Image (tube, rainbow, N blue to C red; front, side):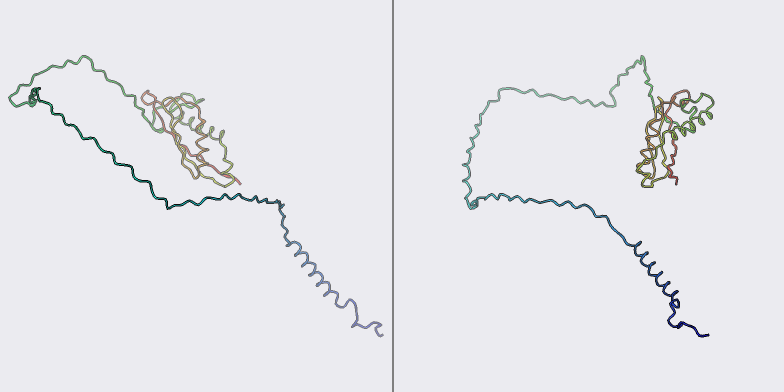
Length: 243
């Protein structure tokens, strides 16, 4: 049986090729639309610039060839008058005796009586390291027990104080600055915190570490041989940025 239609003019013969071409064209237009960039237009302020005519003042031309004024007349000096005075006063010569002593001169012996000799005690500010002082400074809230227990309580109170008053500088946080700051300070003979110094990776972190240590309360001073002494102490403060 013969076919009724000519196979050369079949409509669906190349439909898959046309579908693929159309799909590629649509994908190309879609990609171009995603890659198209637009920019915000800033507002432009147009103003009129008024130019004011400047007033030009005519400067008179001066003659620079004017002769200089004549010099002033010389001043005549008055001649000095010499007066002759008769020498009627007799001057007595002064004889200066020698104060040097010879070998034959006798030296007068003198006895010096010492009634009282007052010895003034010098109040020296002795500094004893925290690790070797006989009695470390007592942090408020620590019980006066053995020196080892006082050291442990002191270190714990210092760490609690740093955690309580810690505040990361916002500028350093935004710039991603971090690191360890070593702080050195002294607890003087009155129990006050003085001579706060720090060393770290950035000034902002050092300033924050010194601020925290400056908030420490007054303590009972350290003792060496029963006398109050200054005790230096150092502690590292670690600034970390947690993701």
